[in-house]
Amino acid sequence: MKIRVLLSFACILAGFAAQAGQKGRSPEPSAVSAAAIAIHSATNEREPLEVYQQRRKDLEGKLSDGLIILFGATDASGSEAYHVFRQESNFYYLTGYTDPGAVLLIAPPIQDRRSPSWEQSSSLPREILLLPQRNPDEERWTGPQLDPYNPSTAEQLGFSKVEGTEQLAGEIRRYAEGYATVYTLFADPHVGEEESPEKQNLEKLRTLLPFMSFRDARRAIGALRQVKSQTELDLIQRAIDCTISGLESSERGVRPDIFEYQISALLKYTFEREGCRGLAFDPIVGSGFNSTVLHYTKNFAQMHSGDLVVMDVGAEYGHYAADITRTIPVNGRFTARQREIYNIVLGAQKAALAAVKPGMRITGRGSDSLYQIALDYINSHGQDSHGEKLGKYFIHGLSHHVGLDVHDAGDPARVLEPGMVITIEPGIYLPEENLGVRIEDMVLVTNSGYELLTRRLPREASEIENWIKVAPSNRPPM
Image 1 (tube, rainbow, N blue to C red):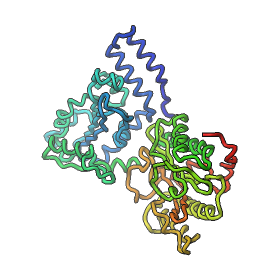
Image 2 (image 1 turned 90 degrees about the horizontal axis):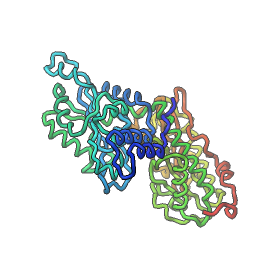
Image 3 (image 1 turned 180 degrees about the horizontal axis):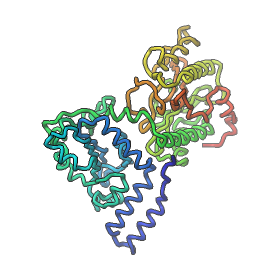
Image 4 (image 1 turned 135 degrees about the vertical axis):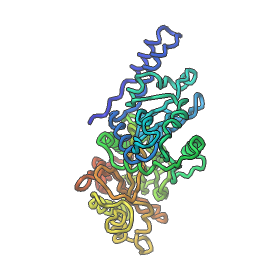
């Protein structure tokens, strides 16, 4: 299925100016609304509306015993909005909506016809998207916004009903009759922010509906997100292709005496040049000792001949992430020891890849664990400088899901199923040798095995050396 093609932003602005009329004249409300709709489409490479509609139906089926209320992310207003806004991933997954301040309400049908609320509930729309009202003063800072009361807005977003968020309290009270449970997002346990937006939203709902029971919708949404649609796979592949182009560009820059941040800058430039609008995460470009630091993001050090550099990077395209790592020698040639460790890591990755299929797990210690397969390989090959096994230097997990987030939602212990996208990323980190190696590729789980989505990128040590065989003195200046 083809992804919706981006509209020309320049054409949108030109059309907006034409509708506004002569210089200095404010555009009519209808012109502003049309421009807002066009900008929303142009800056958001969405999947087809029916994909989001089906996801909402699937979630309704999973949480059919309660009212579902989900809040989109909010943003600083006007001149205080200094950063690019990014929608909360679960909210985006269900709506495709990219602007701040929206709320989604889904009301599964009440099953008990004897309920006094059944007749009223059955006459209401099953879902509503609530958007902030337009604020002309705010739009001078942020640009045209969608009007919740323009009939074309609901059609544009794929909802039967769109309202302003000033109606939220009344709609919640009206819809809550007949339900004993409300599903919403609790604070992410992995983030642990005491004053997280999710916590604040939950407290507001509890104040509004003091007699209701509240449950976390995160697990149900995460389970849906783990299996990707074809349109999601198309977007992920585009993010992967941008990331690979960035890594291919970086090899033209890696050489002794340049700084890690110069390679980081080259990666970021290539991502945007290739059409990706941002980073899935801050690039890791760690050379020498820094190659042994897992989440090193300072990227300030100077590279030296004889060192390895670990480049763990990912572009984001259409809200979907990539995550790829390559380890290369700064001077273009592995030492004997570097090649030994590199080949052990590569062997562990190949062993795990060969076992990827439905029914396996990315975590755990059993025979069905991809992590255990990689660990066993590392422990049975090579030694550290003290003659001990290398498994203790593999200090992170082997894999994670990738999608709207680089470490995507869902239960990591769930068995693999067709349509899941995961990484395979073994590593060995020897600080006393200033030697760290990580090789990370992205995989689609298929009905019978896997598809290597990053196959275009070299992995063998000899391929890496050929990839960067241009003599440092002949490489183009940074």
